[in-house]
Length: 455
Image (cartoon, rainbow, N blue to C red; front, top):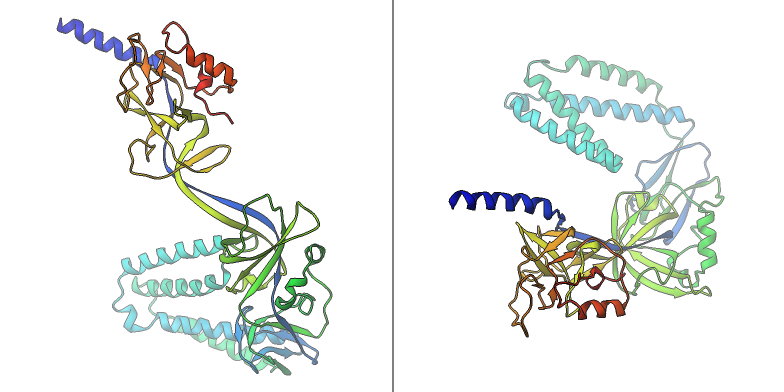
């Protein structure tokens, strides 16, 4: 009897493996955002800075830097070589300073090779990230830090005793360049306080925050098609009056649910940075498929003052939930959406609470309620659900006797002992009703069309 029991169990398990071949997808948390992309036009209060002297300009401040009234915004030199010599002298002096710092006995005598090596590895990873982000300003600072660490490491492991020879050579080169140095011929100063930009585009006196109410769709299209107008040869740069700026663009009003006053995230094609902005206004145009959108922001950086036109992406809503593939979705008798999940060798039904839907998947609300789909559930997307594997979550009193090989879903609806979970085309309502009427007979085959979601 024991041997017979073992054989029966063995062959039943083998049969089960061949009979029930399920394709599942593990339920995980997922986020999905509602996005709208368009060409945007920057609008700022700007004033042009002009100079009268002829020559080559050198800018001591980065674009986007805050400048006080009367501060120098540009030096005028006779030739580009004069600018190069001065720039090279500053570079060499900085190299000398780094080497002197690296051979400071107070650092090299107490530093451990393993510790410095770990700092070098960390710095290398930081630089790799900055290169990927194209953050050249921060990259320059980190490069100097990496160079100092590597110089210290060479002394700590006794590969170098000091850098006196290198410092002497750099100082000699600085002396040679000092003899070639020519001073600037003129300086240009700011006549107001604001944020400096070293170039102009011809729209400084055309587009302003004060006149944004008069902006038309045709004007926006004109700027997008010609973002750079002809400017004067005496234009040195411009001052942005304040850090607030706006952007105007043309959107399809049916593309998303735009609401004035909503806070949105804005991504730019020209920079990896994102900013938080507010939808200031939605203006209808003569075209029913086109509205003017105006957003405002109070963040000003180097990248945000480099262009007049940029492609942007507005993220309106960001949803998070349990990702459920559409092909796995089923309905019960009460028209509740749900899925079948695999629990070891048993099958159970779990409801879903949609918070976001698209063509490929649904995001179900994350909840502690065990009757709903949860993280790491194995959602069945394809396969056959067998009666002997299905486990009910609720007990429903039967109204009449039913065949032993029938199985009930969570609502008590009786199914024939096998039902297909492979994706099918949706049937008609009449077919659905006929199948429901015949579901009580174990001789009838259950139609998938009654349980698959209709697109």
